[in-house]
Image (tube, rainbow, N blue to C red; front, side):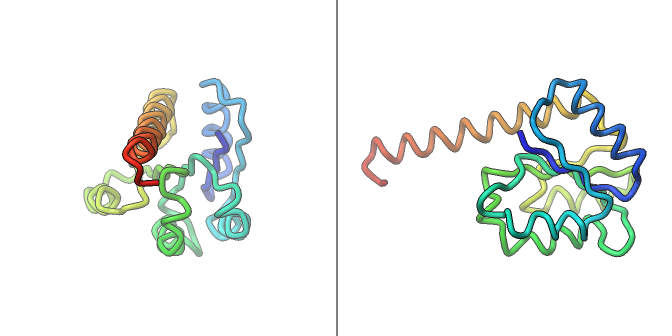
Length: 146
């Protein structure tokens, strides 16, 4: 379960990574102090090895979470059913929640700090998504569509 953590706050990154580890994640967790750094790393890996999860802070200098999502939109097909993006925010702004709910690449919004319950919910959602995708492929095969 390759996971990217993107946040300009190193303390938040540390806490999020430790929380993921405590929840049992043994897969690689890559932390980025800013969205520009994350994009530089992700861009050449989008097709070959996208992360299964991205936990993305919304409020960052230079490139915020929304700008990061904007550059991912043209690559939505490469990420579909392979990567789940959760926004991390300390904001309680209704506008952010509504915008997140309407964004095709965003799986959900999590209020900081990232906790065990949020991680469990994200993993369960990922498992449901993977199962649904597998079922649709099996159904297409059995119907001769593939």
